[in-house]
Every structure is written in C-alpha cells, then in structure tokens.
Length: 487
Image (cartoon, rainbow, N blue to C red; front, side, top):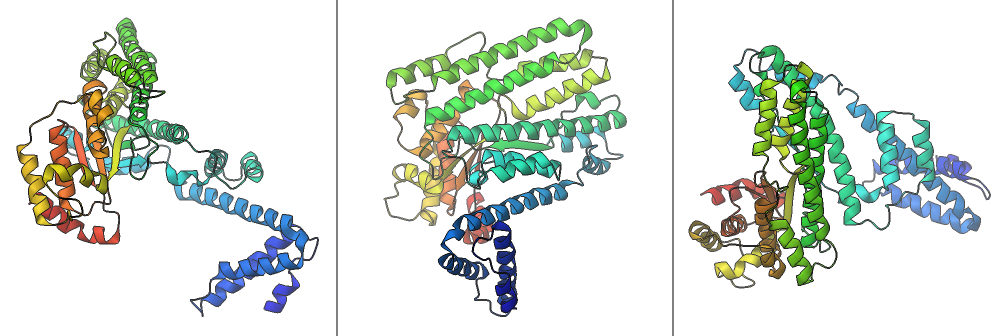
C-alpha cells in the first residue's frame, strides 16, 4: 500500500490537485492503521510526510498552501450542505408546530392558553465561538445551507482566507448577534401566526385573547463579563439603550403596517409615541460613549437617562392595553392576527430586542461577598458555614438605594452588575426579567450570596439567578448542590 502511495506522491512542479490526492490517500491509510494501533496520530504522521516532501522540493510551498485552501474550502462547503440536509425536513407550513398543537385537541381554552403562553424552550445567542470564520465565510455558508450548490457562494468561499476577521470588536460581535436575533424573531413570528391560526379554528370566540410565547430569544453579548475585561459598564448601558430604541422602532413599524380602518388615526398616534420613545433611547445611548471615566460625562449621561421626559417609556403595559383595545375593535382577520402577533412580541420581549443575560464568574461573586459575610481571603466558600452566613444575610438584608454614581464608584464586578440591573429596571425596562448567570458555580453559598446582593439592591423581583454547572464534577454534584441551596 505504501508503494502505491509513493507512486502518487507529488513531484516537483505538481500543483495543488496532486497534493490533495496524495494527502487524502495518505491520511486514509494512517487512519486504517490507527484501528490496530490506538497510539497512532494520523494527522501528525501526515504532517511529517508533508514536511519531508517540502524539504525535498523547496518550491512546493505554494502548491501545499493551495492544497490546504482547497481542502478547507471543500470541508466548509460539505459542512454547509450537511447543515442544510439536517434542516431540510423543517416545513415552512409549520408541520412540527401543528404536531405540538394536536396534543391540545379537545382541551379547554384555558388549558391551551396556559401552555402556549409559557416559554417551552429558549435560544441564547453568544458570539465568541462563531468568529473562527470571517463574516464572508459565515454568509456564504448560510447561503449554501439554504441553497445547496449555489455557484456564487462557492465562488465566494474560494476567494476567502480561512481566518477570522481582524480585529474582532465588541461592536462586531453585537452586530452579528443582533442580525441573528432579527432572523430568529422573524421565524418565530411565523410560528406565532401558525399557533393563532390553529387557535382561531378551535376557539373562534376567544382566540384573540391568546398571546403565544413558544420560544424565548436571549443574548449575553455585551453583558458577559466572565473572563472579559473589554466591556465597560457604560458600554453595556449604551448597547441596552440601542436595543431598546431598535425594538421600539420595530414595534412602531409593525403597527403602521396594520390597516385598522377608522382607527388608523389612533394607530398612528400610538406608533408615533413608540417612535418618539425610540428617538429618546437613541439620544440616551449616544451619551454613554467616549470617556466614561470622566465624572462630568457620566453625570450628563445619568441626568439624561433619569430625568422626567414626555417621550420616556419604561413599561409597555399601557401600550399593550391600547393594542388590546385595537384587537377588541378590529374586524379584519389579517389585522387581528397581526395585532395579536405584535402583542405577543411585546409581552415576550418588552423594551428590548431580546432577553438579556448578565454573566459573571463565581470568583467575582465570592470577591464581592467576603467582607459582607465575614469570610477571610483564602477560606473556601464550599463549607456550610459560608452558606449559613449567606442565608442569614439574605434573610435580613435592608434594601440600599443605588444610582449611576454608585456604579461609577464601585470596583467589584458582581456588585456593579447588580447595580446595573437595578438601573436597567428603574430607567430602561421595568417589566422584563433579567437573567443573572454565575459561571463555574460550585458552591451553594455563591448563589445564596447573589440572592443577598439582589435583595440589597432591590432587584430580586426581576432577577433570575442561574448557576452554571460547567465541569463534569459540577454536573455530577448539581443535584446535591440544589438540595443544599433549597434546604
């Protein structure tokens, strides 16, 4: 077999195709050998072979580079087409949704409503694993997954280097995630419409009361401080306000497309109110830029965020009541469905493009708690004494008022993130819960300490504290962890 492989080995002057044929044959041979010798590393052996060939033919560098590019292109195309095949059974008419709805056949409206208005699953958009590919590669891959064989996408891949964009900024991450969220929510509107069509058929007198919420969409890009030092708290404010402005503008645009006949003037007035609130949010966001270690700049931004203003909107409750009134009066089926979809999105996402996940590390929580709990540096948080101290604090804490000046002065990351939550709820969106993720969480006292801090800053009513079990040991102990915490 080795003689046959040597026979097809690249010769001086051979191009990329010859190198590809030889590399694939060589790799296949070594992989078969690995079945009998598990210590064999087929990729390493191929690398040694390539090195020997390069030493024999110094001019082969460019051909080997081209061969690597060709193999990488083929792998990316295959990955895209596999992705398309995995999802080719997803029916545009909502077949899988209809299968779910079939389980409610014969049930009361209240039973169906209770099930359909609770999130059954959640999608969380992160960023960092994505950027091993450039934006151009991601776009071409998406096209190929949707339309296998697309010649323009394949041609684009052939011209692109297999390397991430440089540099990758937080702004790049956030823009990519926001684009993904827009596409996901567009698809989910179709799911909501499908549910409403089913409800209209089965509950003709009450279907318009339904606000389906089958799947939640969330992101932690711009809110994740686990292992990152490049996200200033002011940047988090800016992103949250920009997302608020984007969502309010989206609500206004959706509303303006719905024909409500005699109520169109009222519709436009409500859309204008949403647009004006979006404009204010953009103005507020613009002030959370530049040097936010400058007290004067922070003071101006804080005053603009907190002052009374006719355009200010921190809750959608009144807006949803107005949409409900439109639903009560609307007669056209299409208008009714569009209003119900709009109401569903308002109830699901409030004044944000998606739910937000603040994410920090357990070590950051412990650092913020040691002084309050009387646990000296170096002592473990894992023992029952730490848990008892945290529980006692959580049970007797008195709420502390905070403001943006408090955030400006605070040095502890965990405290600052909880203060951010308090300011978000007071001045940006009072109704939508915030998830507070604690990475690498291995001690119940860490979670109980976070409960104490949430009560200290008055956000426990809207904060979902979620420990993340991220190692095999933590996952194995997770059940016992929760038992101790709840006890």
